[in-house]
Length: 212
Image 1 (cartoon, helix red, strand yellow):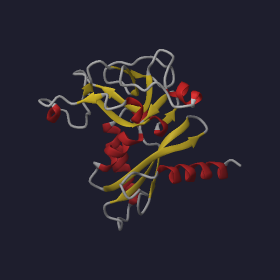
Image 2 (cartoon, helix red, strand yellow):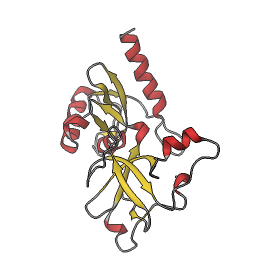
Image 3 (tube, one colour):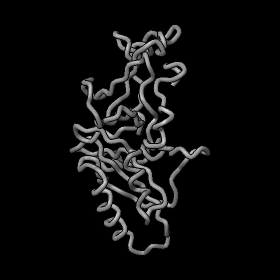
């Protein structure tokens, strides 16, 4: 991100291949912490939260944008990146999603990208997108839009049971997909990024229609 200058993490050349999916350690002279987005408390090894950085590589602020600066840089100099990730026991950072994409299920934050990766790893699923679906009890629940490898599959209910059971073995109970829908394709940009906005608006419209 441009707010952090040239870089904030870098993989050691002799260990990068041993940590697929990670972006490296914090660079010398820069501080890194993982913070609970809701409470602001610092989190420990393996816990998912927002990445904050502090050091000489952090910008001073946005030009003539005091409010935006205050929203990004804390009073004691920490930069809220908006990236969600965790640090493993060896200090390697893995970024899994953006803060604005997180699903707020009860008191938990669920990263859609983690669920999507698990769903796509199932042999019956060709593609997947997960978004927040409004829920009266939980606030939001994860909903998966699924594209089948075989679009002619007759028993989609059976496929869904298999996929949900598989997912339940991969993630913590609070991260499980609560709703799903089979679709022909996942909307993506030319670069391959999921266009979540349309799916989220679709869910909100459906929730509003059912509770006018």
